[in-house]
Image (cartoon, rainbow, N blue to C red; front, top):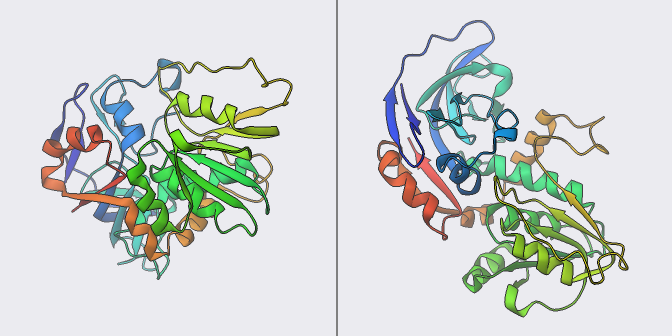
Length: 318
């Protein structure tokens, strides 16, 4: 099989490897598509994973180390071509790096819903993250919700929240061209330089600490701010003077590696992923696929995919 590797910071390579036939309880998957997650994969590609996070950041099936070489990725969609009869020929999602064939325990693959095309299922990890953010935010009917960052995760957060009865959702981005993306998802949009009003819940999925600072300016009394961005080794400077204390504002983090405590008794990772796949059964979400590259060309195209600010979810076709 062939796999995509990062042998050193900002370098790409395709490597041929040998895999074993599946054993008891394992499946052999032929990859159909994988998705490039621009934010996280950029940090890995540029060698910006903090030393304190190298264990928490490890993907379930990654190889190597973040100090390089490393094989990284977590959005693979394929077809089971060898394994238990109940899974044979089934389309599945798996948290796996970019690779054309792989063997994993059958418990690590999730069968796609009949209504979900494999080509859209590369958004599954992003949708799972967005669902977790909405849970952490505690959005309720009637809440005024501001989502900063119209990338894949921010757009999915706004999309989920827009289905909560009575909730007023606003998707915010400094790129006014993202207004069309919001419109096609049925979500109101505002450019960050024209934002007005106060909100009950403010979610930063922009990857920019400046957006969190702006969220503080538009937070209502006792509002909740959810920081869903991850900055790697960078620091974030926030204006915590002014009305921060008198308004009794709360800032919490959200990270997909843990199910929120209020749901952890009833929800495990498998149930959460299953729900994320169900939520992807909407043709409008195809707008979040911003481009496609053949797997054979990935090593050449990868730096440009990560560098382009227009990249949403970039799909790799096998």
